[in-house]
Length: 138
Image (cartoon, rainbow, N blue to C red; front, side, top):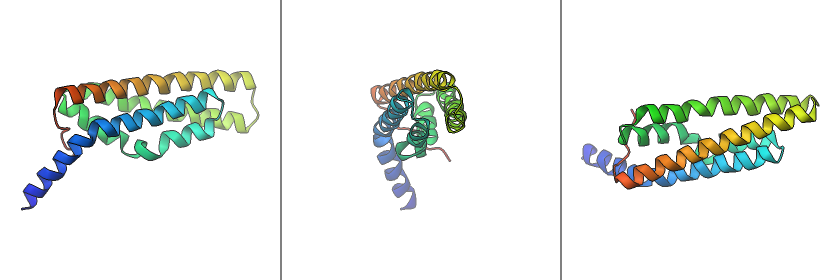
């Protein structure tokens, strides 16, 4: 009975995986928009809340299901430098550093967030096209 319940839960997660990845891509898009608008604090909040809470697990499950573990790892590994960049920019903005430096760094962060969102959507599309359930990560 427990095994059947686990399989049913895994199947439900697999069906929801592309939608969760697209929700995370939306959060990354909001992060990019906020960074481009100059709001490092709000961009970091977008990067850390909502669908992003399970981002790493969702990406690794999807990549595992597609047998593309290195692709998933590359996406996940790109998240930390983006968060670090936004943290540094936020501190610079709080310290009233040169607005040109802050604006330039925010544009770079926005670009990185857009690239990460595109990679996440591509992974969701590939997962959906393959019709494969996302493998559970234990």
